[in-house]
Length: 368
Image (cartoon, rainbow, N blue to C red; front, side, top):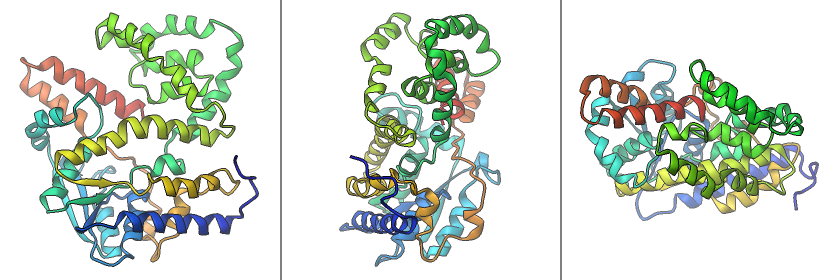
């Protein structure tokens, strides 16, 4: 049962959150070998760095940089170095190029075990960490799902509120999609064709948000009969609905969907295969059952903790220029690498490169 929304005041929420974060970080630092950390300039890994640096022992941190993004708004290396210096970690920046990706391309396909559109960044940061002798590393994975860091926490409730009244007009969404899908894809995301059909429920809105390709697009990227059979067998809308049947709060509905589907099926799986590929144990203190038990009641209060509350528990606090910088989002130039590979290589294997480029581009532009 959820607690009363006024059960905790703001100070109590922040104190309880601080204790929970310290406890989880401390437990994940227990090891027979030194534990490092994957440090971006985001609030999740920055918070873990600040918390871990308070514990005994010298903390090693590592950041991934991409030559194509160097000096741009998506380059996190300078901010990460500033955070590392602030908390006294032994820091290293590893720069990755298109040539590195091309050299490891087949290896990445082999170790991912099943198709995925994510994980290139985790693969290379795990590889770099292992090359330094690191055996265990902390990752900030899970903070966005726990503290509402994704745009989906804002977009999904707004989408459902806008389109749910249209559910009374049975078949309208299907007709709209059939009419608009063939030409909308030439101007914008094909997902817009499905807004009336799917946008009125949390399951449908989440499918639009996180799905790479909509059901009517699948025959263009795989065998049409297999696509139709898979859709009938998997019944994604049914299972998405089963995730949130008794959750009354909009924020908690989105959190459940993100944790159960995107985090569990993609992000945690990526951490598994990339870590195993380099004999590196990747630990995720923000995806911890005891942490969730302590924080979940706080998320149901009117003083729901945010990422800012998380970093405000740090001592010393984050540098102002890090805390106040605009959110840029983490970008890996895989699509650019694939596109340049197609144009430079051509011929044999060209279709495979183009297909992966198309899928990665869709992931980077519409699924975040």
